[in-house]
Length: 74
Image: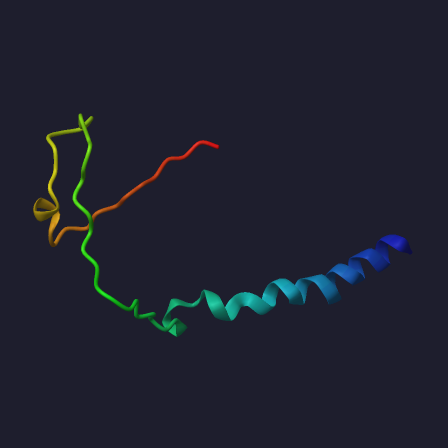
């Protein structure tokens, strides 16, 4: 009997909680957010060596997609 009541609890109480968040997952319903202001990216400074290639300038990256990945340990 306890097992039956536990299953009934899961089906009637817990399952609708997880199913209620389905509306926010559809990208067609999202609205874009405008970020105020216009700032320039800072130039790379105080870098003594590059691992994968020659040093870069911001003017070399203009119009390209740039992914910045910060790795932190702590």
